[in-house]
Length: 403
Image (tube, rainbow, N blue to C red; front, side, top):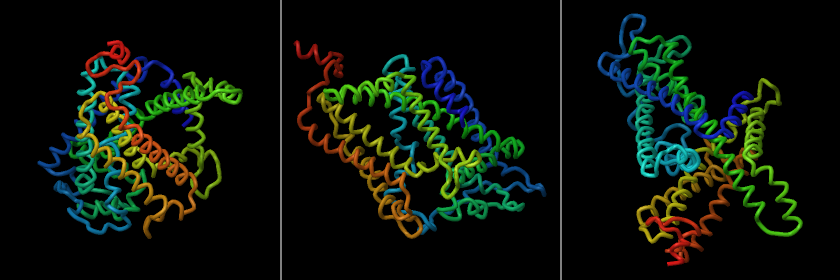
């Protein structure tokens, strides 16, 4: 963990083209190779069945997951949770941060952003389809449970017996790794090699997120420090400005990001005291917030885009409905998780949790604040371009004022 945090610091402060870009390039080759192997394995399994079992029998590839389950054990409401569990493949606020913070520094010109962004989403949608096939059909080719090989629906239920059984991060990742590894075994690869290759695929995704997220947090910390330092006047404000000056530096902001990540990771699991053996799992404390905050950030990104177009007298009707939808669903989900819950999924408040309710409530209040500010500003900014900004015709607002 310490080595990874040290790597995150180095990757965050170096120029994008020195480390992050070549690392992404190498990683993309790993990902494309792994996806290619999964597709080949899927084709072979569809035509000839899965890897031969001890008696030479090749299990037939079929969808092991039930087509419909009207009352899955322990599952939350389909509305709104369906729309926040699809965290990246459909729409992602984190991808908005990546495109503005790192992707924009790597493309040759603006038109390339459409190919990179839209093509990236299509590729991720393709990956999502393969994940569904791996978890819904690949598991049916064989899962070993207590020394016994289960096939078909029995294999699927061993991983998805209930919402709680499949609820942990490790269980979700493990189901994909095993299901995809079964496709690779149909090609003749050993079980160990197949699982290792799929493990590398998952770890590669985590690796790309690690240093990119640290860099993005560094940007946010620097901007917040700059804003707070410049706000207000007086002796007290001056002292605050001096205290925040070091956080405007890329090294200071990155050190801050790395230190709070290390502090979070060091938090032991619930009910256990701190020790080296228990350290490194604290990040899972915030994992339940990921889907809702990610989708909420996507809704707020829509809000920013709507303002950008509105200021330039461009149509915004096509973005308003998705924006409202993507702001309501995460808000609804957070309220449900915070205060309502159910018998199988108690609310965070009723469970006596502190960190999740605090961050969740702060996020809700920030969303309400931004929506109120947007409603107040929207009628008065139509056609008013930001100072020194370019409109869609290429002229700056200063040039327009002079004209």
